[in-house]
Length: 591
Image (tube, rainbow, N blue to C red; front, top):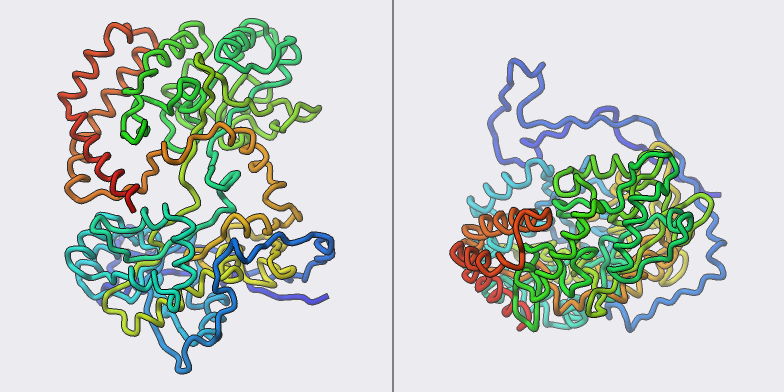
């Protein structure tokens, strides 16, 4: 059995922002109170242990048939190498999360240089210094050939690309099958990626990264949050799984009053969520979805092509009346509108369960390792499918995910741009893409057979985040489409369809919004549009949130006060803000 010996890291790695960024030739100054640590440095400690990685028994995949279909993947898989007879060097400024290793020393990138003849010299910038370094570099006009994962905003693309001409418009290359056949195919299959990537002037300065493995369940649907219900409580109280919002009220009322956790105390919290969350735990689908839109009142929705805030939806008043009913009857966590995520999770993970229904990615972070697809001896929480509203509608939030636009952006100063474009197009081949995101073959990942890939076991004393970034940054462009995702297995020998998140999200997928009704956040705005939104929207959103919570808690009458409140939002610039969003949306859908 073959063994690989890898050294984890040197004992103490001193990474100097000043050295890496090469943006300051003066010596670092010392703060007398800083125990000798130089200003601008970050210190990362790492163990000195080495590991032996044994080649694994891949016979478990002998009977696994690959469903990889070349017609569903980039066309130029078998690229003629090298790309150039004479070695050519380019420069790239790169930053990556949790970075502790110089990309120039990463084995995958060294191998690519040997294969292609294209040597990328990486200028590695720490995450903590990224924004400052980017700003000074753009201001100086002395650019690298490529920026990778440097967080260049769409406004900056407009300023430094459309106006100043510092970035290279690669539109013609992206349409040329002789230069970038893979990118051309990607944009044809994923027009939303092209629409999201172009500047407001319609120019393309960068190339995307797409990973459909992390889109759950996939094929145009990404379910972020799910809702789980305590099925053990349902069983104990003789209740059926609720299907309608009326059933839901009945079940939550029983949870509140009938001591389903059996401790003799009325400590049950029928429904909890994190109203202020921008990531996970929001009630946006649970409470508003049955009424045909995704809330809360500040959430952008698309209705027949028109951009509106949730508060403007025809069913908003009815939704608030329903939520007020839940609140008034003590069925919603008293802290749901104020607590932070730590508090939300802390209550849910108490040894004696107190949550009847909770909302989260899979539910496990909130209620602990007690979630399964079906009730069993170990688990008591199961998925609660979307509820049916008064008009029979079930709706759950969908989002455009798996896309990172303009992952690499090219400088107008880059010489021999055709070769550079061919190199980046080569990165989209399946084997390159798998290795960029899941690690190098025979280290982090195995190529079991053509079109079938499997993860290695995690070595002792490594975390997955460290291990996956041992041979690559995971930030260079790549393409893992849905068909490839079907043929990627984890270290347990499970494919995507065996993943719990996949199974869970598949329950909600039939009720997901159509993407044409989703304001994706990839709609590019002009600087003028951004200025108006940034200036007016904060006070509009603050007013909506404040009033919405008051209505939910019974402070005022939403029916009687609604029209006057909408008029007050108009005085704050509601229509003007929506006009900017609509213009950006119209450009996005026209690309």
